[in-house]
Picture 1 (cartoon, rainbow, N blue to C red):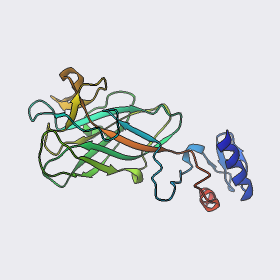
Picture 2: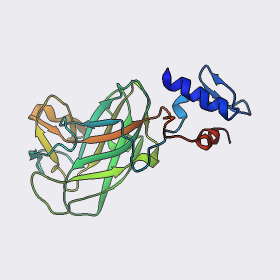
Picture 3: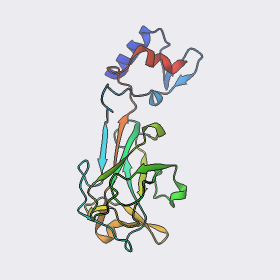
Length: 224
């Protein structure tokens, strides 16, 4: 409520119409939903508000890995947005290594376990940070996905994952209660059954506008 009051005050200063029931009404009658208002990161910071790693702590190190015969070429995990706010995903990460400059990442906005990678709702490339093979992998590779615009609505579930540089060989832990999957035998096989949890990480930030970090011109820009 405090943020909404501050936002109304800012809008009044620039003589924009009042908030409609479902957003801000522009000069031409269009409505910008509150969830579409761009968050403004503070200078020198990405303003992360969500951190999630299947291992628990951010950048959890791998203690084991898969095998070239026992795990598939892709790992995925799931996350439910229980923050109560729409979240823009900013970064993915996972510990891996191997030859080749780049591999693929994948994303699904889905309440159920997705199909094969060809069904991904978004995908792209990531750069392998550590080209030297070791087991387990010790270095996280990160991919900046902020510009892709992957918005996870409040309460929604996503799945995300990556193509391993060396098929079957990726950072894992002994099973810790978090279920992850590897593509094996034409299906997503749960690592839980084999006593493992794959390490995957994401970062994001809230799409609720921060009046402390916004400017009048940024709010006006919604109505150009």
